[in-house]
Image (cartoon, rainbow, N blue to C red):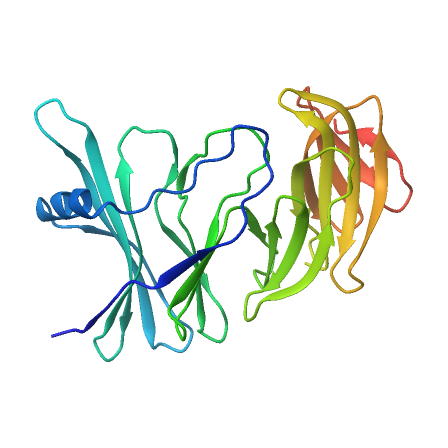
Length: 277
């Protein structure tokens, strides 16, 4: 019979900056509700993901919505497990979800670190949080050695998925997926964060700031943070245009989307900016 290991201790990273009201964290499991939902059905496997060394298989089990009473609310339950080759089972995380409710919820498996120590997943597979402000989606990391997990409320993987840009209320932190923090930059006092994008080579991060997001208005500022030098440079300042998103697909060209939905291409080489046709 497999051995069930108790759920790990959770530590939560600081949530991303956002305008009031603050985003609602992903739901956690309510024991009585979870047990009731789980007792009424057989779960379906949403996704599995094997570790590079073949020692673990991560598995997301979903118990679909169940009504409580003839006209009562409906709840779903999800659980994230690790199954070891020796038959041991580790419960990584769980959620009780109000069906049809607001907010972001649901597990999805993202990747294993190359050394098989860390499992990365999101606890916000579907939906968006309450409130107003920049949000890239939550990323959680489970350490199979210490049985601890960390939740980063807003984070983005580099194109090669070897680094992670973690957005904190007043700073950008860069993580290596095999380890921890490798660089940090405190945000300037030049508005609120509106967009983040990795360079194609994963060496720089573009951060777009705007005066206000709720509603969108005011001048915009574009900064580039270099992971190697750990220095940031302001490369663009606009007083007449409000940009709300940044896209970085070509090495020396960055695309910016304004508040009218028009996409502009900015050249890092010449400093010229033109609307896309």
